[in-house]
Amino acid sequence: MRSRARWVTLVVALSFAGGATIDAQQSAPRRLTLREAIGLALKQNLSVRVASTQVEELEGTRDRRRASLLPHASGDALANRENIDLAALGISFPSVPTVVGPFNHYDFRLSASQSVIDRHSYHAWKAGEKQEEAAKLDYQDARDLVIRQAAGLYLNSQASAAEVEAAASRVTTSQTLEKLAHDQHAQGLATAVDEVRAQVQLARDQQNLLVARNTYQTSLLVLAHFLGLSPGAPLELAEPMKFHHVESVDADQALHTALEARSDYAALLKQRDSLDEQLKASRARYLPTLSVNGDYGAIGRGFNTLAGTGEIQGTLTVTLFDRDRAGEKTELQSRVKRLNAQIDDLNREIEQELRTALLNLESTESQVTVTEAALHLAERELNLAQDRFRNGVTDNIEVVTAQASLASAQDDRIMALAQHADAVMALVRSLGGTEKIYQMYLSEP
Image (cartoon, rainbow, N blue to C red; front, top):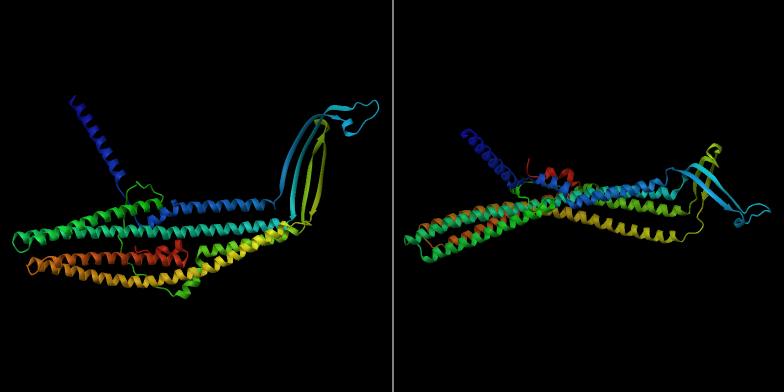
């Protein structure tokens, strides 16, 4: 009995331990690197999934238009039993019944048709091909844009995490200085005002820490939604925000490369090519079409009397009057004009994005250098003020002022790092081919 009790106890203990392990695994936050976040976004983001279905839809449109140029075949089987009223057809003979039948009638037949010359259908099919190519480019542009957006949201969470870390360090410093003010007051080296002032600063820093933590968690919720994850899934950033030097490029040379690599620009060009094919299809509506049709089968009044019959014919069709083509031509020409204007505007927009990204890259790198120097100075200022207060040279107004300077310097450095990282991703986006080159610009090896 004792042995059995020990076994039962062991099984229960293992069950609780296994349950605790499962709960721990379920509650453990998912650690995400920037590359992993981008990979999830490319698989699960709504924009990418919608763009993919648009490509599939236009593939179907292309196949439908091509079908009009391919052979068509069908089979028919007719089994009929009928009476015929000859009088209703205007046929009547003396002493001949007006109703003939009933009799059986069978007809088994294969029919086929093939378009030989049809320029309208041909250009409509080519227009569908161009539309499909444009949709594929739009899909790639959606992926590139999602990479840019995912990196921006991840960067925002990194900046928020850095703010939490800085706020926590300020709370630790304030706790130390509050204890120092209390000890100095107890020793008669400081006034009660100094102690209260330190307590107020500590409360302010604790409040800022709570706000920073809430901002960080909110940014993770936004990131999770964009990545297609459940908002309730715990996330954790695997990479802290850090500076990574990026070499600048020549704007004029980069612009030429960007116009060739940008999928959104290439998609507009393909859309214009599609409209050109549609214009050709519209003009071809007045051209003659030639098709060949034929059928072969067996016909008769009984299965033992079926006889093989068939025919083949060519059909030449010419449109003599069709006012609809004039309106269609006007519509298509207006679309071409609108698309040309969009292409010109996008050309200028790409150049603006590229030059702006290069300016921001250079400016933010300088800002990072300046803010890091200012941060070191602010830390030194706080240390000096703390020593002066500890030695009774001055009150803690200098300490509180130095704390405010340090907080401002920390915030400035975080903002400079975030702006520099954003400028890097903006440059990657403006250069085009984001999915191919973005990993070259990431900070991790």
